[in-house]
Every structure is written in C-alpha cells, then in structure tokens.
Image 1 (cartoon, each protein chain N blue to C red):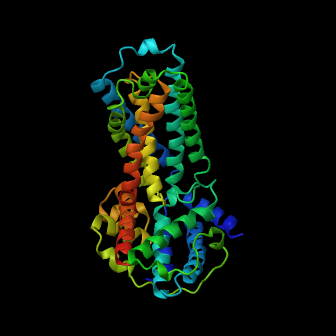
Image 2 (image 1 turned 60 degrees about the horizontal axis):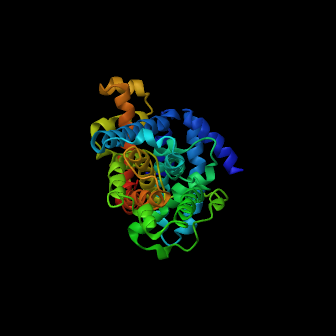
Image 3 (image 1 turned 45 degrees about the vertical axis):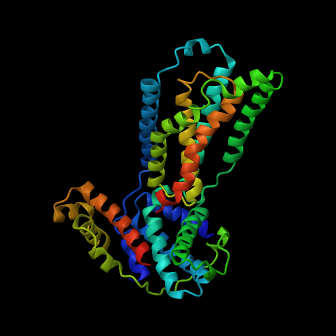
Length: 213
Length: 179
C-alpha cells in the first residue's frame, strides 16, 4: 500500500478526540486502586488503635506529609512518562529532596541517642514486616498505574514501569500508615522507602514487557 | 515553522476536522521519510515500512498529544521509539549511522518522494475479524459515515467506532510483527 493511501485511510471519518477521556481513566484507576488498598489495610491489618493518640504528635503529620508528597510527585512523574516527548523535569530532584529531608530528620533523632535507643529508632517493632506489607498493599495500585499507562504511550518503558511502581508504593505507604505503629524518622526513612522500592524495582523489570506498544 | 503549522493542523484534527488531519499526516509523512531515510540509509525499503508504522502509531496514540504541548518532541519520541523498536527487532543497531537524539532535526527536512511499503494494508485488513474489518473498510476506505456503516453492518454506532479503534491497533501490532 502506498503511504498516501494509508494517510487517506487514517484520516477518513476521523473522530474528535475527547480530552477528558484520559482524566476519566486516571480517576477510575486511582479510585479503585486506593479503595482496595485502604480496604485491605483497614479490613485485614486493622486501623492502629492508638491512631487518635498520634494526632498531636508532629512526627505523625511529618510521616503523612512525607508519603503524600512522594505520592503527588510520583503521580506527576507517571503523568509525564506516560506521554511521548514529555520531560521529567524536576520530578527526580523533588523525590530526592523529600527523601533527603526525612534522612536529615533521622540523623537529628539518632545523633544524641544512646546505642540502645538508636536500635529502637531504626528497627522499631515492625521493621521485618513493614516493607513487605507496603509492597503488598501497593499491588492494586501498581495494576492501576500500569492500566493508566497502557492506555497512553510511554516511550521509556523501564523508567515508566519504575514510576508506576514508585507511585503505587508511595500511595500504599500512605494507606499503610493508618495501621503502622512507628513514628520514628529513621524507621520511616529506611523501611517505608524499602517498601516503596520493591514495586519500583518490579516496575523497572516488567516495564519493557508490560508497557510495549 | 513546521512546528507551528503542524500544531495548528493536529489541533483541528483532534477536534474532528478530517481535512486538516489528512493535511497534517501528509506533511508529517514527508518529514518522517526524510528523517528515517537518512538514518536507515542501508535499509531503504524498510524506511517506508517504518514511515507507515509510525503514521499508524501516531494515529492510534493521538489522544496522548495535548494541544498545549510542543509537537516536535511528541512526534520525535514516537518516531524514535518505533525506530529503536525496529532496530532491536532486527538487532542490527549498527545500521544506524546518524544519531537519533536530535529532535529539532526531525522537522527540518521533508522528503515527498514516496516508495511503496512492502506490506499491504488491504491484505492485513482481511485477517481482522468482521467487527473490526467492516467498520475500517466502510469508514476508512470507502469513506462512508459511521452512521451509514452502522446501518449496513447491523452494528451499533459505538460498536463501529470501537471496531475501527481496536482494528487499527491490531493492524499496528500485525505490521510490527511482520515488518
């Protein structure tokens, strides 16, 4: 077939594109993913019974802000990497900045502490399960982000997969924080991040297969 | 120059203006051809296949272009993705002698002299199921309206639209696996 015939065919009866269609898919995917993640956290892991006592604690709000900020920045990354020719811009730097801010807080908490207290600040009581629970909660969100990306056209597949994984991980960490009894900055700076990085690495690994078009 | 003109054409095309959209694809074809012929100088017959593959990809992914976004990087990213995909499939990246990362170059030169691609879309169409083949045939090749096609095929209007959409995606996948 000659190329001008193909062009004629592609253009024939072309339908207008609804620009709201992508936003609808974003909303549907994120709402479903978040609902399942929160339902799992509240229904199976249970809300932390001490949650109301945390409310006056600054570290509680710092933890929530940390997860929320990472989620928002990662979502922006997904939004950009899902479209051809969009640059990531300051997204990686912003992610790094948030993580480093938490590490600075961790140093501040660890510096004056005794060796015993340091161990408690780093490992808390739940370090062994925290990353895996976050990764587990991230599963429905990971699928949601991949489903969004499949409807769009990422061109850097490994990076796009990693972004989908990190966005899922950071949103899952936010959901998990409803259950999690830990408030120490070193704990959050290490184990929450590990939990987010599990789906990130999975996404980087699977991206080239799952996101091809 | 090309950027500004093509951007206004695709914006009209996305709003459903068939003539502007055809003009957009026609002008883009010449630019893509020049871009790829230089890069695939040792695979001349594949250049035209790839031009067509990229055109189908651009058509299928046109919803990912936001009119406030510059057009050149969008087209370049798709063309580059499809070119690398082709080279990877052939695992002969040594055939590439010009760097492909300079996106400004894409809209700089045009090549209007078409070669014939080696695959035949009409033949590929025959392999599609009726619910995709008939809508594409009537609307895209015979130029019938979606409503007429719905009447002629007994399908609903939305089924016709979905058939066209899915059929073109399937076509792109077939082109990819045979090219």
